[in-house]
Length: 111
Image 1 (spheres, rainbow, N blue to C red):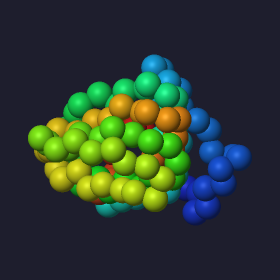
Image 2 (image 1 turned 90 degrees about the horizontal axis):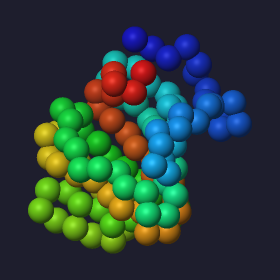
Image 3 (image 1 turned 90 degrees about the vertical axis):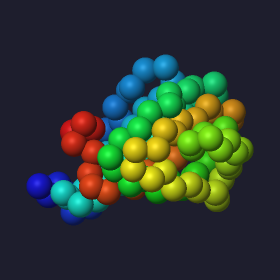
């Protein structure tokens, strides 16, 4: 599976409204990797969850209280995190912001 668009232009990439103050844009992907942008309003909650994908995330903007397994940290612009497969993780948005997520393999459930 390969996304048809080799370029993903922000103004041309639709946002999916997930409700509860969270939206996402799906960027490039194939069977092995996927890039996703997630926008959070203040106090939006990325509920604790786990999945079989490896996830690496970069904080483009905002401030988040991030939980990975038993560890909790405040992360902000310029920070990032790694969530290993099958490890529970989630966040609470303290200041509105955007997370840039990379998943491997791609998130079939997002398509």
